Length: 184
Image (tube, rainbow, N blue to C red; front, side, top):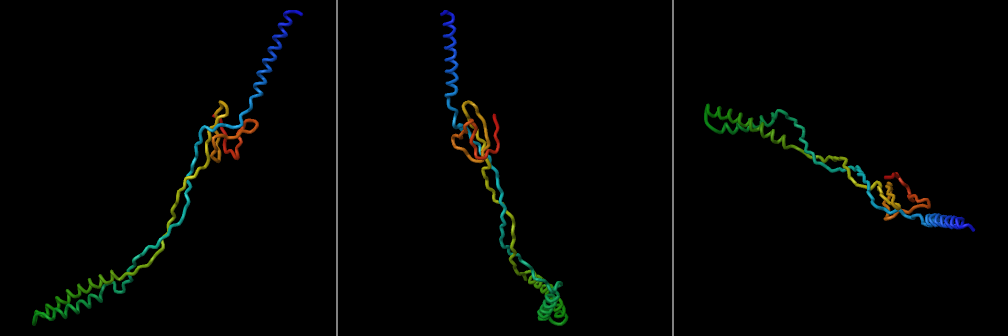
């Protein structure tokens, strides 16, 4: 045989073995079964729940006044003051003391009736209600940063994953209900 033919066949066999070895090595590597979770960022929202709060309030009312001008108090005071004033002095001085007593008694009776009318009150209970809100912070979803081999991506998930996320046979994430998927 020709020496160059033997060398050519040898090189060809070696090249074919090398290609077969590389191809076999590439196909022999198992695809990853899990993506490694690198970071989990929760997204929260504040939920406001309304509820009614009621309490009783005592309200003070003034009774209706029947004698707006306080005539009754003025008359009774004037009569009492006149009787008292009439007890002092004699003659013309007694008349002046009676008039002065009637005037002072009339004024005092008027003021006494005003004080009584202002303090003539009663109370009623009124129910007052208002709407108040309780706030609660809830986790809405999670932005998960994961790594498959040397490739890093993020996905938004409705639940918090563990340290790894399973992959399907094509190397895609197995998610229950992905909300959004994006690459970095």
